[in-house]
Length: 380
Image 1 (cartoon, rainbow, N blue to C red):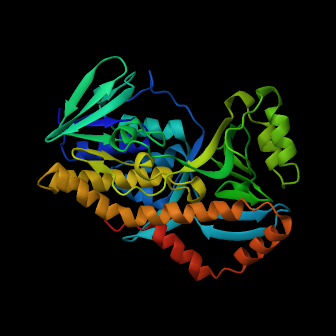
Image 2 (cartoon, rainbow, N blue to C red; image 1 turned 120 degrees about the horizontal axis):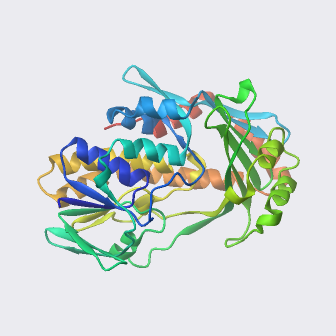
């Protein structure tokens, strides 16, 4: 076997697709016993769509989700704070942000790979590196060696723990609930992501098809909190009761058992993403808070650059060094900007919230366009 990928999420699957395009032998090992359409929604922004177009998957993603025209931020009374386009032009083509169910996106990726590319029920517990290769050890006792290993196993990466012990997550000060509501939005909201900012709370939503809405809600609070399912919907309705419609309706039309709660964490930028013949990508290497909607997109960008370097460099070590050098600056900027946005949306003082909203409203359009170029452009 030439290569091993740990994790069949967005980063692992897109990397396998990129390597397959270059005729590089690789296999994915996934901890879950089966690949099922779990999770809530995800935004696939223009920079990710540019890469997916190269993989021949952009049109399939557009068809499976909803292409968005704009990203609008409102205050708690429904007054617009800011608006920005959800699209970006590259080489004469326009790419839109797509809102889609995470499981549906995973299925699009899986359909692009042979069925034998993914081995499920393989929970990686240890990675060992040595000159000329890497070994993955699994909970069931199996061990597999390859010329290189890609750790695409997410925020709480076992591969990262093996390569760089002692790395801890940074809590953002916010917890997040996510869900899917079975409603149809009004026509004026069917092509946009809407986000509402309050005092220490936030609620965002976008359609992922014509009868379902992906939503997320954040709140400033201590880490480690838990909910009672029997009272969760009532709690959320109470927290966001002053927000404009259709926030309450979205919460009401969500199956409580499917609501996911997670504390929002990221990683301090790591000094290195690789050790010998093993490399980290996506959240395993550079997890950011979701405030720019770039987590999955940066993993997809990683997949293209990493595959290019493996295909064209003289050694795995050289490929990993060039991969990190190419990607590090953009990723660091996104991690830092995303964390700053989280601090801004996490303000709990109502007077400061009014000042925040006024400042954002007064931000010149050219600065917003500049930020979009920095995030959405794919310079490789």
